[in-house]
Amino acid sequence: EVQLVESGGGLVQPGRSLRLSCAASGFTFDDYAMHWVRQAPGKGLEWVSGISWNSGSIGYADSVKGRFTISRDNAKNSLYLQMNSLRAEDTALYYCAKELRFLEWLGWFDPWGQGTLVTVSS
Amino acid sequence: SSELTQDPAVSVALGQTVRITCQGDSLRSYYASWYQQKPGQAPVLVIYGKNNRPSGIPDRFSGSSSGNTASLTITGAQAEDEADYYCNSRDSSGNPYWVFGGGTKLTVL
Image (cartoon, each protein chain N blue to C red):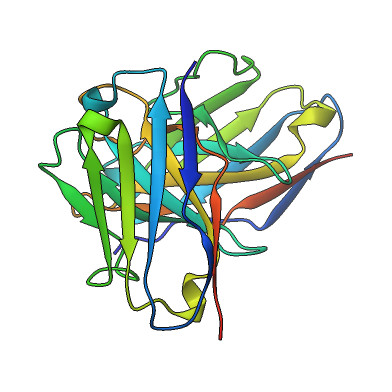
């Protein structure tokens, strides 16, 4: 069974940093692209960032470009999101999601983890 | 970057058919994927590609596309289908960048 478990969320002051992690199991991690998607309280979904299976291709939403960095460690079956210069508008539940098909980069997200909550507030 | 537009809310009588639409320029080049999200739960992929369902998704869910509009159709809506539905597509530039629609809240009456 595919499992994605996010961690690293919490309360952080504006301007500070936070690193999210996503531990993957139940599939060959280094065969799949991975993504981060967030959802502000009571709001819709927003794609944040994605990384191909070999880290050769990376993308970011305009809202986080230059502040967030996605990475992965295939030896540890883990996905990361380094978030710097955090703002109040970054407050959201952050989901880790697996690409549906191996060695493809299509933005079909399946499955999703349960999310980790990031709150940016002074 | 591309934008995808969805109606905020749609309702359907139990057992009837409902169509949820998603509009955007990127849909002329890329298929939409569709996600169902129930309160307090993570989203679940229900339709991807031209009209494909992941295993476990009932066949009452189907997808279609025409021009700049993608549609998710539920034929014979059930009470358990009441949820928020989001469309998603790659940016029309072809760069690794994806966009979600604002979501449609489906109420089953």
